[in-house]
Image (cartoon, rainbow, N blue to C red; front, side, top):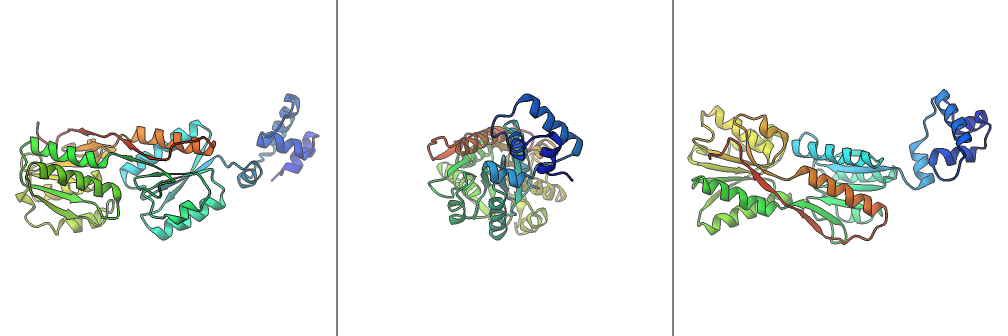
Length: 324
């Protein structure tokens, strides 16, 4: 395979000229550019991305940490972020952490070694490590530090909306299936739901699940709920867990929404694939993705940005698992 020196020799120019052309770091005449590109096309030469990153101090790559690609919400969010970054000439380095701190730490070292220009960290569990990277970081769903930008949807409001919807549709014996305590977002949904129930003097039963995406574990957690048929309303902390609940209820011949009404959270694509279609809280994935990309690119460009927690508004999408 050809290298930069051979390309320069065949084009009849110096290696520095080829470097300027490939890395776009200086003037190269149109005539010379055409000669260099011709030799690149003939040889199939592919520039070394890491070498270019070292030379230009820019890899045009963003590291994207997500907890699990099989979770429909994070799957969709990664797609939106990748599409937006591609519009600006960036690619993503996708890191699947599985909510494992050791794995997240390993990926962080890999991102640093590949000289990524920025990092988008979803549900980050590391603190000092991100602070010491010297790479622009934007966090989603968890506050790493007051010096790092955070983006999240209004999870507390989402919990309140979920309770109000169930209450307005006549539910009084209500169960909330909450996510693991380590997740800031699901804790806020739980608090909002509970606070709104307190305003109506309604007692809520709470069951905490150990995972948010492993369906086998979700099904095992469901078996711990005794007499689930006594409830007339259930708020589940995300859509994939809500889908698991719906499957469980159908097996027990419990009709949705006649016997039990259900609300999920995220408004992921699976909501409209379920039968009946799932009522849920919409996190507005497009707005989250747009703002995340905008902020990380502004940080990379060195713009002065107010460091704060950006809260994205949410809304309830009523479908068929709650009654009109």
